Each structure stands twice: as C-alpha cells, then as structure tokens.
Length: 447
Image (cartoon, rainbow, N blue to C red; front, side, top):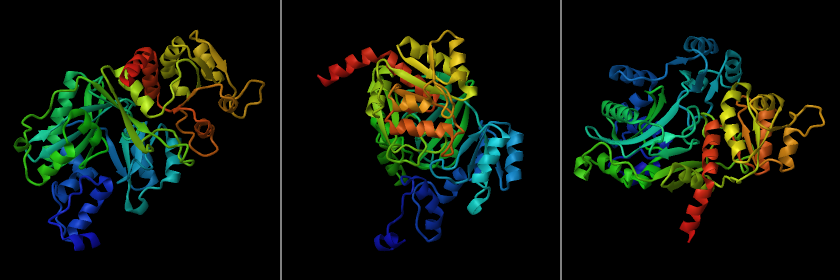
C-alpha cells in the first residue's frame, strides 16, 4: 500500500504477478484500489472450488471428481468414495506445494500425518487422479472475443506439475477433434468467467475425452514460450484488452492462428545439485528453476535440442540404471527394449532384472542398498561411474533415509541425469534414436 499511496495509480493489473498477486487482489480492492481487467468477484469464481464447480456443471463440461475435507476422517472417507489413486492437496497452494498422488489408504494416512487438514483455515482437496495426456492453453479474452494462440501438449503424464513437465507445440498426440474440443471449452470458460485479459487453462485428455483440470485467471509461465513461437506478444495484447481495446480492434478476428510448421519443445531446468534438500522426484509440487526450448522441423530433433539446452547429457551408448516400483515393471519393458536396441547396457535390481530377462533382455543385476552380497550394489555402480543415466520411479520413498531418496540424491551428487517419469525417459529415447540426424543438423547450424 505504500507504493499505491505514493504512485496514486488509476488501477493495478494483477494478472501478470503469478498466484501471489491474485491472492492479493481482494485485499487491494477492499483498500479501495481499482483492479483492472477481470474483476475480483470473477477471479474468485475461478479460484473458489464450489463456485468453479457450479460453472463447470452449468456448461456441461467434464472434470475429475473432487471433494473438500476438513478432518482426517473426512479426507479418508472422500478418498474411498472417489476411489484410489487420488490427488490430495491443501487449498490455495502455491507451485503445487504439498500436493501428492496417493494410491491407497496407508499412503494417505502418511500424507495426513505430515499435512493435517484445515491448517491455517485451508481444508484439504481430494481429487480423482486421471492418468492421461495433459494439455494447456493461455487464452486472451476481451469479455466477448477469445484468442488462443496455441495449444501445448505436456510430454510427461498427468500428475507432474506443469512447470516441471516438458511441453511440445504443436501437440503431437492430439487429433483434430481433441484440439477443437479444447478450443470450444476455452471459449466457453473464458466468456462465462468474464475474463478480461489473460487466463491459463489445463486439461487432461483420457480415451478421447477432454477434462478440465484447472483454470488460473492469470498469465502462466508458458506465456513467453507461446509468444515467441506463435509471434503473438501475449502480454502486450492482454494489456491492451485490459485497458479497453478489443481483440478485433487489435487485428485478431479469429479465435486461433495457423499452427507453426516447426516443432517447439519446452524443457524445465533443475538446480538439484545446488538445492541439496530438494528431492528430484517429479510430482505435483513444482521444483524447476528455469526453462529452455528446442525448435526444429521434427519432434525428435526439437527434443534433442531441448535436452542439450537443459544440459541433460545424452551419451550415444552407455549404461542405464533402472530402479522402479513393482507396479511400473510392465511400463518399463518397451523402453528397456528400445534402450537395448540403441546400445545401452541395462542395470537393475533382482526383481526388475528377472522380469526383463524373462523377456530376453540382457540385464546386469545390482544389489539393493543394504543387501549383503558379492554383487555391486546400486550406490557403488553410481559412485564408480558405471552408469550414465538413472531412472527412478520409487515415488513414495521420499523420506531422507529411504532407498529411493538416497539413490536420487547420490545420482545428483554424481552429476548424473535422474529421470523419474517414464514419459521423460521415452522422450530421451526418441531423441537418442534420431541422434545421428540431429547431430548433423546441429553441425550445419553451427557452420
């Protein structure tokens, strides 16, 4: 308020200040400050669970089933009613903080022990976890007209925070019907929520159906990426809308613009080696500290450039350590076959090794951390630089003394890439399979 008192502005724009600015909007309005663009009441309608659910029902849109609880007993009962797995989180969190996917009641009770409901007056939200492809748009609306410069597809599956997920534009796995439905839903929501300015909407695509995951009545971190690749200066256009200039008056007479002929991949950058207490396991809580991008004529080439820009070492031939949960064994099989074909040596603990060997894949067996055996154990193959990449999906080993956490931290300290999502591994393999073409392309660009 000191700044407001000094500057005496006509009004303030909160849409470009992230979630913190949105959270300040009501208090600013109560203090007599004019909020430009989307009104505080409409911001709250997008943020408040019950109000937003009413809008979704009114428009006949699909969304994951969700409930709100204030006691541990209510959380457990809601999870049982929805059916596991569920996504649990405190309401009004920043950066996905304290979000977690839980697969059974025991895991939920562990979560509740660390995140009691109704802390600071905010209850815990319990949502159906739908596994599928995730999509995202940043839309600009003047109250009547809507502009969607582009649709992005997240490379990681749903459950990884959008800030930590790689994304690709144009989408590689959305058919025309899915893209048309995303645009239809975006137009309905932006107009119904009386958006004046910019809005971010995230979707889950499952079995061809499009579900609304969340709406953020503000600019997101993807605006610079979309602005660069589409040529639409989104912050400038949205600001002009907020100041009263319609989209048609700015020359935008259609909802969409033609898709780029190039493929663009956004990749997160992490600083785990400098943030010793941050677990590298990806999930609903955001952990990235920056972003890079790769662009080329093909998806594989753009992927490779994004990995290089993110300083993710991708050796042509090497060794990969697979430390995965039992439920992930079937999912790792096709990736292990592709890695074997391009010349990677596979390391795994006994259970995973037996599974892969049963499918005629050569695997070197390593002992678990505390196993007494003559075989080298997981930590020794990392320390001795016998592996180049570590895949770790031990998603509920998050305490400081758990095997999964120790493996991830040991690999980080050894400067090894640690991949905790199979979709990231799949992207890496796709880039490696096409590496010879990409390397040639990069050499030509350098010349």
